[in-house]
Image (cartoon, rainbow, N blue to C red):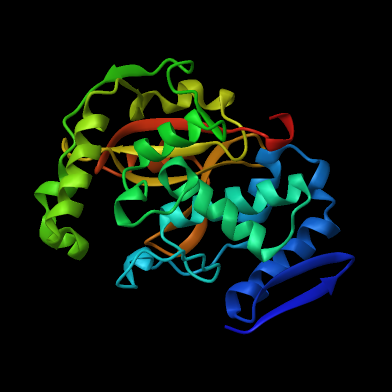
Length: 277
């Protein structure tokens, strides 16, 4: 891979000579022009996320290689990859680390258990597990209960019982590792805001809050994720990588939830500002 360093507007940014790096450089330039470094983390996330509008939605991006390698494309996303990427980008801006290598380290830290890539099973495949692990390490806080969420438990088994959908689960030890993750996840108490009550709590949501849509399918935890978008009129919407149209803003979070019957409610995690750690 051809590595290079480029100085743009006084910011030294290094990374692979690729479409992804070009997009990264553009985003760092936007951050500098808009003087985002001193803004609240959530506002930085919303501003950078909006710059990615129109980026195509693609599934299976993290499973394209036969082994678990770190994938950090910025020219295509699935819904989780979009959330991880925007959070990692914003963390770098507020921390003053605008290098490609730093961005990749932050993505790895968010994506893998304990922040370390140790094979397929170390990836936080279930998004409520992603929230729990990153909350334990101080990167996000689950605020669903504080917003009035109702307790809900379910027996998570989707990956292990749909083994053929995940080629790497053909390996028995990997399958058992995922099954162990599911067992641990199933015994945790979860709080969920029913989808018909989203309007009631919307005013408490901030730009950049992470919204995970709880699956109607009882063996799965989450079917979609995105970021709270706060419009100029104060209305809460969803900034997300959507199968319908790629990265876009759905302007009303309540209406979006009502129009998506595959989910029954939301879990909300608030990213924590790394400057306050």
